[in-house]
Image (cartoon, rainbow, N blue to C red):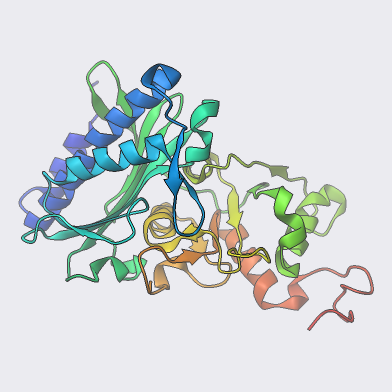
Amino acid sequence: MRRPTLGDHLARWSETNDLRCDIAASVNALTGAGIKIAELLAAGPLAGSLATVRGYHEDGDSQKELDVIADDLVREALKAAPVALLGSEEAEVAELLDPSGTLAIAVDPLDGSSNIDSNMTVGTIFSILPYTGPDALLQSGSRQLAAGFLIYGPQTALVLTVGAGTQLFVLDRASGEFVLATERALVVPETAEYAINGSNERHWDLSVRSYVDDCRAGLEGPRAKDFNTRWVASMVADAYRILVRGGVYLYPGDARRGYQQGRLRLVYEANPVAFLMEQAQGAATDGVTSILELEPTHLHQRVPLVFGSRAEVERIARYHNDSAAMPERSPLFGRRGLLRA
């Protein structure tokens, strides 16, 4: 029996609705660019020095050769779609593409680009919003019409929501089409797996350290079960794993300079992943507040991010909100400790 393709899925969903047809056209444009990015990644060093540093953003993050190429591919593809405004991680300000367009799109053309030269998974993240004027990309995530990411690994896959659940598609290289693999992805509510960059532990606040300590304590600790740790340094890879088998991801703000407000971008990283998680019955917060409720103030705004299995995301929020949720520890850090507010 023939599996439905992305084209089938979008055609059935959009039918005679003009705005939905515009969204479908934009998703198809993005996947077309994604196939080209996947081909470059598959060629690796045969495609050139893709990991070469081309420059640096204002915040100090490096810009790799493939970051620039991916950004160009996405922009060119979307010029043929009904997109009025495009915001990209690789551009300081949003760009007007088609004044008659109905949509505003924010993209991270290549998430995880530090992994380019190590043959690890990277991806392209996108958020689609209604075009409401020059500030259309500063709408809250709850206003998203569609969101998703392409992931370039052993499979090239698309994770997509148009507000009707979260679907997983896999690229069939023979036909060049994305084929539906999972009609309704669901994030299991409970988990025994968490993802965080443990090398930054000394910079975390007490709530994050307490949560991770409780997980590490395992069966003998307050959680009374053993946990596994996973960290890929590519958010799309961790998000895909969580959609497939559950888990929770933490990228908190910390005490380092430039990290106090988090490091991931709200508009084109946190918002689309939060929409995908919510549509798969997971959850996403900044540690306390739902990501989709936050109102962006600028295109490249950063935010702490916690997402994944709902029960675990809610538990982490309790660690931030309620000191009584934390177990007794040493006299200095227990509930009645000298350093506990």
